[in-house]
Length: 252
Image (cartoon, rainbow, N blue to C red; front, side, top):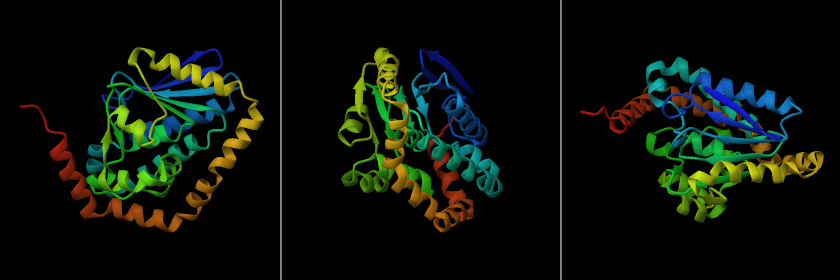
């Protein structure tokens, strides 16, 4: 599910969960736990987050949501929010090595990082939640509001665009496009550069940058309650079911 390796003081966290690193309850809880361990570990000076093959993460495991229904949603959404927020406030440098598709929650995870590198021709990145028929919980929307340039964020959300690496660079979703065979090495180098900064000064500066977003996350409890009820509603579950039927067609 999660593979950890080390390159000097950089910990590489590689998601390896099924074919698509889809976010389900178990992966979210495992990521939160692993991030907490890396935060406490003195051997982790910085973190590189990546996926496997041509998949960074396809976002929420929608078939699991359909199968689990409202009761699963009410357990899953708080877990995915905790994972996103834990990643967003991670006090050490985080570099996303976007090796392939980073869709919806996968895009949010990348955007929670301090630096984002994406492999050329590796896949698409974007936030198509509204095309699925689900509203954004407060935490992932605030992460996107923090990371994406203000002139693009509303369009990215409303249109649900999935962008190739070059377009993603133009829209501010990533910082660097690199060759696939250089991606991990360049991400580790970026992480090492950030880890070379005085740790306490970096941590405080990162917290200052992200504090307004955290305040909005904490103030959004009422909205999040409404979002959870929307996700758990019969109408939304039906919309997800229809999207899954259209998108995850079985080969003939």
